[in-house]
Length: 185
Image 1 (cartoon, helix red, strand yellow):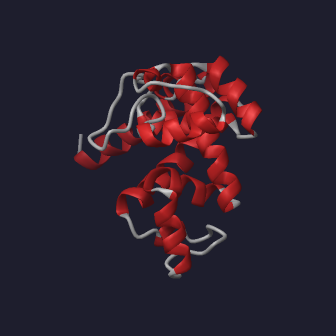
Image 2 (tube, rainbow, N blue to C red):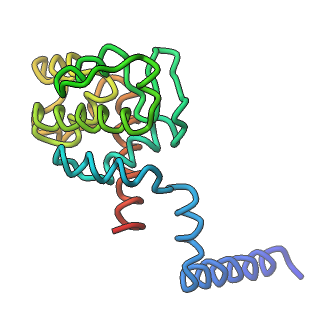
């Protein structure tokens, strides 16, 4: 058999396999393994309490720690939502909660503080894209980028975020959100 004919047959087989997988929802089973819903009781509770879409919280956790509650970064961020101790302490104080650095690793505390922090950023910037950028790069940077005209105040030009890491982070969260929303909504 000629190579072209073999490639054509392989192409048809691949299409059939993907079609069958879609019919049998195998794709969703695979995606649910890659995009789990963990710590649902805490995410749902604090997302509702602080007025945040829970799929953004799952998306942040997926990107930040991939659900590893013991995660820590080279920059000192801790836990599921990768909170810096200073940020976690500030948010905890605003909620009237005392915490230790070790407590930041506790999934419930980390999700409570991270969700409240994200909620604060949403209120401060008025849109998700800028709140996500601020979650990653810090509010000072996002405010500076807006004031210097590098990005728009409405967050409509995320492709102009000057930090490559933050630019990719926002895109990753948006992609995670779409997948979580499609799988679980």
